[in-house]
Length: 152
Image (cartoon, rainbow, N blue to C red):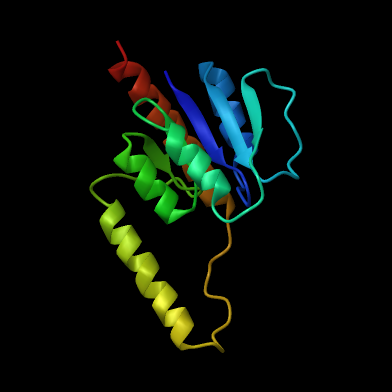
C-alpha cells in the first residue's frame, strides 16, 4: 500500500485521515506551508514546503502515483494526481477519477469566470458539514480497502 498525501492547508479532515490510515497501517504525508500542529503518530510525516503559490500541490503531484491516495479540495492538483495514477478524494468524500475530473475542472473554470464577471457577488460556497465528514470517512475506508484488494 502506498501513501496518503494530504493537501493540509485548509483541510478539515486531517484527523479523520490519520485515524483511518492508522487503522490500516498506512503512512500519511501532511503537506503544508507550515502552521499545522505536528502529530505524535509515527505513521504521520509533517512536510513543510517553501512559501509560495501551489508549492504543496507541486510537492504532492511530483510524488503521488499508483497505490497512493491524495486528499485535496484543489481541483488542478486532483487532475495532476489522477493523471499520475493516484486515487483522489475531496474533503466531502467525493472521489475524483479519470471519468469525472474533466467535468469537475470545467465546472471550476466556469465558476471562476462567473465570479470574475460579478465583483459584488458574495459567498456562494457551502459550509463543511457533519454529513460531509461522515461521507469522507466512509469513502476513505472503502478506497483503502479497494487498494488492499488490488495490491498483490
